[in-house]
Image 1 (cartoon, rainbow, N blue to C red):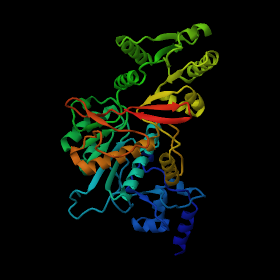
Image 2 (cartoon, rainbow, N blue to C red):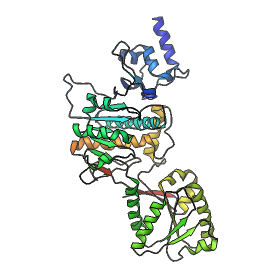
Image 3 (tube, helix red, strand yellow):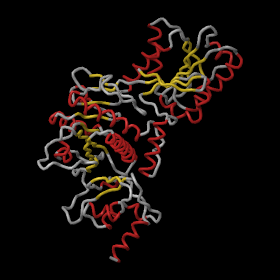
Image 4 (cartoon, rainbow, N blue to C red):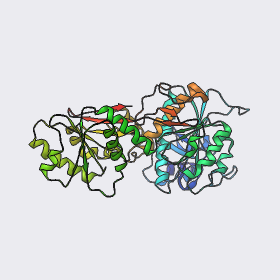
Length: 458
C-alpha cells in the first residue's frame, strides 16, 4: 500500500501527458482522453498497466508541475506482460476504437477512418502531421457529440519506411477512407491497396500523384499549381471587368510569379483589355503614367516577397497622395496572408484581394474556440503556419466523416453533398476524366476599405 501511495504521489507531480503517441517511432495501444476526476492510478488499472508503465509511455509526466486534467490526451502502451510490440510502422496506433463485437464484423453505423502519415517528433514533417492528426481527433470528438460513431486507426509512415507491412494490417483493409500519404514514393502501393480493397484515399497535402488520373478511389485536396493559376486567372477576369490592370516589375530574379503574370497578360490581350507595365525603379512621374485616372486600377506585382511589397506600398502612398481620387486595388498572392499582422491597414487601404485555396481567420469565433480547445487538450498553441495544420485536419475530418456516413462509397464530394461550413479549408470536388476527384475550391480573401474582411468563394 505504501508503495502504491508513493507511485501516486510521484504521478501527481509529473508533467501533463498530452504529447503525441508517435515520438521516436513508438507505437501505442491507443490514446486515452482524460475524464473528470480520473487519476493516473485509475487509468493504469483500467488498462491493466502498472503506474510506472503509464509514466514511461508519457515522458512529460516526469516534470515537477504535472497535473492530470480533463480532456487532455495520454498515451496508453501495451502492457509489458502482453506480446511485445516493435517500433516498426507495421503496428497501428488505435484511437477512439469502439468495443469490438464478438465476431468482429463491420458495424454499418460506424465510419472507419485511417491515417497514414509521418506521425513522429523527429523532424518538421512529423511535427506538422502530429498537429494535423490532433485536428482529426478534435473533429472526431465534435462528431461523437453529434451522435456519430467513428473508429480511427493511425499508422506512423515516415519517409524512409516501407508501408507494405502497414497495408497488410487487417484494420487498414477495413477502413472506409484513409488520409495519406505525405510522400509521393508511397503513392503507388497505397493506390493499388485502396483500389483492391475499395477504400477511398484522401491525399491531404500537395504531392505528385499521377495515380489520380486512373484511380477513381482517390480524392486530392490540393490543386496542382498550374490548375490553381488557371482558375485564379479565370476569376480575375470576371472580378475585375472594367478595371485598368497595372503590372509592376519588382526586379526579383528569384520570383516564380511570371507563370501567373504572363498567363494573365496573355488572357487580357486575347480579350482586348489594355494594361500597363511599370517598374519599382521607375521615376515617380513614369510610375504615375501607368495608372488610369478614369478607371479603377488593379495592381499586380510579379513577386510575392515582402520587401518588394513594402516598396510598392510606399510608391502607391506617394501616388495616391499626389493624384486625388485615384482608385487603386491590390491583387496579391497566397503568401500575403502571412503578412496580415504587419500589413493589415495597408490591405484595407488598397482594397486588397488575395487568392488562396484556404483562409485562416484568427478573428472568427469558431477559430478562436478551436484554438482554445487545442491549447487546452495539448498544452501548446498551434504552429504559426499558413494554413494551420490542426484546423486543416479538423475540416477534412468533419467533411469526409459526414459525407461517408450519409452516402457511403457513393460519396464524391460534389457541391451540396455535405452541409459543412469550413473553418479554414473549403472542399468541393470534381472528377478528373475517368480517374479520381480533385478539390476545385478557390477563395478570394478581400480586405475592404471600411476595415472589414470578406471571403469570396468560387
